[in-house]
Every structure is written in C-alpha cells, then in structure tokens.
Image (cartoon, rainbow, N blue to C red; front, side):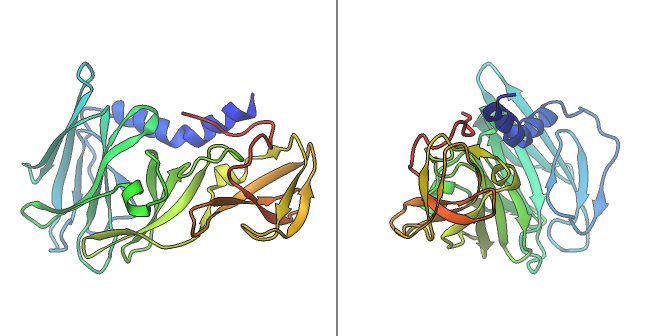
Length: 285
C-alpha cells in the first residue's frame, strides 16, 4: 500500500472509529455504571444510562444523553438529562455530538464535561467544558485552539491525558502545516483552573507515536542543523536515506522547526517550510 495513504488510515483511525461507533450506538443499553470516581476519560454513548457523582456530594447522578441528527438540514441536537430532568440542550450544525466526562482537577470535587459537535472527517467544532453543581450546568468554558494558542489552528483533536491538577494534554492534528514533513499529530498541553482555560507555554511539542514512527525517504541531499534556527550543520541527509521526526519547535517569531533522526540515531533540526525533501509525506484533508 502506498505509505502516504497507509499512514493516513492509521493516523485517522481514532476519529473514524469514534464517529462510526457513536452513530451505530444501540438505542437500548441495559448495563449501567455506578462509581464515585471516574477512571480516566469516559465517552458517553447515545441513549445509554451512566451513574457518576458529578459534584462530590457522595450521591451519584443518573446521566443520559440523547443525540439526534437531521441529515437534510445538517443539524444535530443534544439533550442531556440528569436524574431524568432535561438539564442541557443544544442544537448545532454538524453530524453528531461527542460528550465526554473527565476529572480535570481532583481537588475541586467536580467532574467535568467536554462537549463538541463532530463534522466530516472527524473534525470538531463548538467545543466547551462545563460541570454540574447538583441542580444545573454552569461555568461554560469555550475551547478554541486558535484563540488559546495564538499560533495553532486545527479542527481535529481529542483529550489524551489528564494530570489531575487542571492540566491536560490534547492530541492535535497538524496544528501548523509543514511542507517539509506533511501532516502529523502532536501533543499540546492546556490547563483549566478556576474556570480559566489557557495553553501551557512551551516551545517544544512531541509528535505522537504514529507520526514519530513514520519513515521518510529523502529524494535529495540536505543539511541538518544542531539547534533549531542555528547555522551549525551537524550532519547531512543523503538521497535515499531513511529518517524520522519526533519533535516540533516554535521560535518566538512563530517559525516552526522539526527534529529529525537518521538511521543511526543522530538528531538535528530542519525548517518546517522546506519543500520537496521526501518521496512521500503523510497528507489528508
């Protein structure tokens, strides 16, 4: 199989599988979950009853989300019931709603909801955090990558890791497109604390395993530099060499660089905007 499309299938599998599983969710689900502590990140299935203590009062709430889609109008409706009462209702453009429960901050006694509409190709929109105080949903906090980071723009993302202190890590699809390496996935850290959502300041971002394990074949020779933005050549990649990339660096001026690793494990950096370096680069819409 052409490696370009093989990598696309592998990298996009999460979004496609997630969307299909939500669309095909059964209308009746007999089992339920009863726990006072949430284990990780829970994606709620449509028409399924869950039991969680949402506000730390020692009592579990009955949670049910009902999602309907009007394909002709391309509208999707979410109705979220807590203890059989309609507590949150939304209608948005899109194909479905994605509703997850997580515990961002273990010290505040609340569980959090992260809600998004899903679009074509696994794209997300209208994302926000909220929580339930025992009587109503409150503290609606919008999640928008471009607004939060000032430098990234992507509509495919999901929460990958929680620290328990308000910090969490998103896997984001190609936050900055690179002519050098094509499309990729990387980890980007954020924090939600006291109802304030922010991107955690850093210059270096790690690529996910799917992206860092992708093997690039050079079609021409080019120089690799010791540090991002430096002029100190550490080695040269030759035509037909196989290389990998594992990190992205963003300078203060906003320029992007990627760390390259040759088949001997030697590391260095190249500019993100270099073109026509490799035979095949991951690419998807």
